[in-house]
Image (cartoon, rainbow, N blue to C red; front, side, top):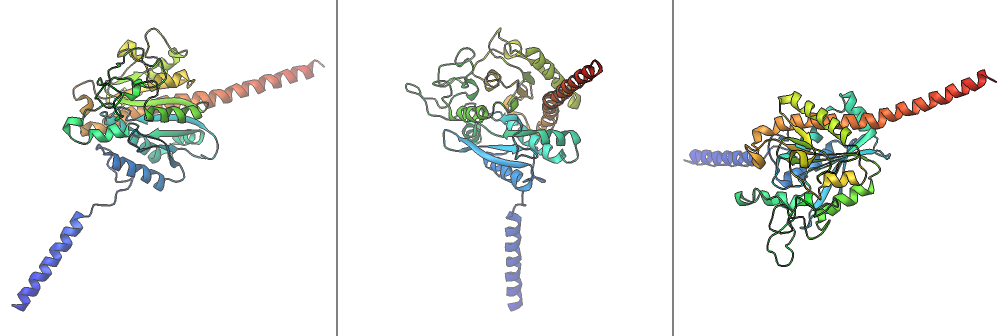
Length: 365
């Protein structure tokens, strides 16, 4: 009887240990982080910490603003030799809360850079010359709200309090920038999804981007903002019959990116300005970036074309990110080569001309 009692106690202890061990989740690292699933904000924040901790030689982060609800807006800085002032590629995701594929892409983008830069000669060169500034989720308040329940899943805007005489929260952050603010493709009704806010830069999230990017605008050579859906690459401007001064070049770069995207899984992306391929709008971050002098500014509208829309299934995360990465890399490579190789060629040409002038002078002395 004593033996049986002891056996039962031992068995209960083993079961207890088993239950404790089974409840322990495996340690998450960048290597085993699941990039094929959508992640809530707390997991994305932890992932950002891991990126810096596991890659201190190329990655750092900083807080550059706060949301309306007081949450930190952080950016990942990825680059080699980052003690010197370098040119910058900007990328933000999650400006619209319900577009979950967008933050998933920003994470995929960072993962691919970190995975390949040591063996990929071109990416290594890019990281030596450029710094990437990546904000995985800009509209943190709204994004967290979409995770509450099914009824909030399709929330688009920020979560700022309503103005007087209105009961609806938030503003469309991509109608709140100082780019023909409030002119077209917006609503002044705070209950509408495209409500542009009570004034230009009324939203703290838009203020944060504006302050940081303007502080280094002479260094920022490319501004990429990632959205869904529609399979589009949009160039400035959203206002009808107004084109960016380098519109033809922007179109060329965008079309090359669309070809790179198609080469991965055969997905077609359309390239053009919003009035031409989508709808006219004002107050977008893309237009604002070009207006302050950033030469290359694009909006990506990721998969799909409406079958699933903002609720793109998780089994499409990987192919969507694979092809979009190819498109983004195409743009980044073009911009990098234009800035660094064209500049080097120009300097070489100047020196060659000076040398020839000197030689000619010597000959005719």
